[in-house]
Length: 225
Image 1 (cartoon, rainbow, N blue to C red):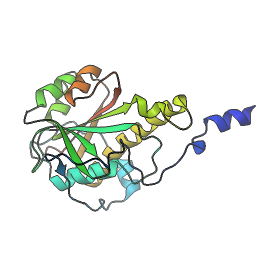
Image 2: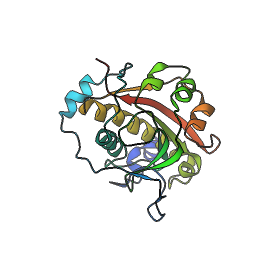
Image 3: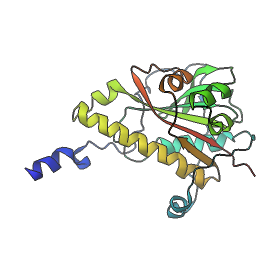
């Protein structure tokens, strides 16, 4: 009986897809004309164990715009190339100040390393801060990440919806931690917040909270001196 329970709940039983990034299969769709193609950036060269040991939440950011290459590097690292437990995780971001990118909300397409506009041409700092219970760290960051889990995607898990639910939350945790690690490796600051309004956070990036659950909210930027 113990062996059967272990086999039924072990992550080793989950299908692994090396190199498959989280997100919907959108490769066959045409990119919209206003999509932002991101540059290919080499991974940050750093001692991974040292970064893990020293990474911290940073709550004070400079108003300096985030370099485009730095944002591209963090996004690429967030989405892979590690094995993916669940394809249900969606990466949306609110750009407040990034070089060469119009402020607004975007969906990250990891397969084509591009940003797909959802709400652009508007300063969303106040809305982002309000969605995070007026925490300045989200309003002052150069970029705010909003991770969500698509209910249909986790329900379609080959091992069943119950396992898909767990896999999706594990994946969201892994993606969230990669924000910290890549930010630390690049000399940037990151801070995740646990307090946010679900519906306001969903509206911020233009998703339906009935179909997509917001599970992670984090700021990224250049540390204040």
